[in-house]
Image (tube, rainbow, N blue to C red; front, side):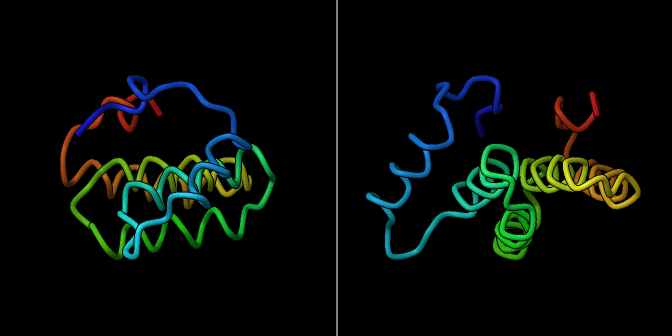
Length: 102
């Protein structure tokens, strides 16, 4: 699994357009998680961001990256308690550098 700092830099419009034009029949959980954070951070759609990250967790609950993204969305929504709870939950699966920093 790649760390999000290693991902190529792309603005939300580019990533959103790329996502919509190349959607596979079954969208990978990692794509949902990244799109959820992007929707919340760059477009201000917090509810959609939360929903996409939660779906990613439902599909791949053992991946700490999804918890990291959901926690970041909760921080954007000023829900610090939920963000902290989510970060801690993600750490149960694996030490993720982003989760530890938060």
